[in-house]
Length: 83
Image (cartoon, rainbow, N blue to C red; front, side):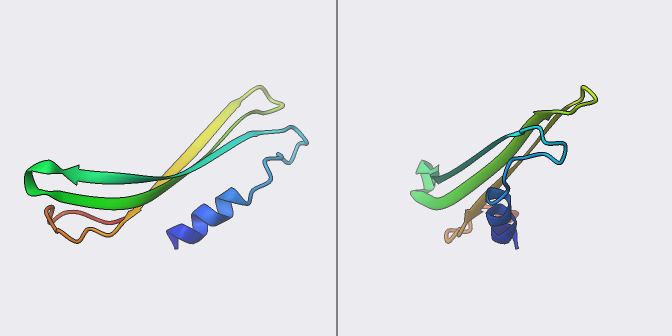
């Protein structure tokens, strides 16, 4: 479900309904949650999307979302949620 939301967010055109252009930014990356004391590495991917615009009424609108997806095989943290 979250992968679908990220994909849908990346497909947005970046044009507001009023005809003004909004500043859309996105990123995709990889990271490693490393625990050297336990010789543990959890490789993961992450993605983010944000929008920044000023409305005709003079309001500043900013929103962002970040998603991390991993597969923790070492189970070092019992409270760990992979997404």
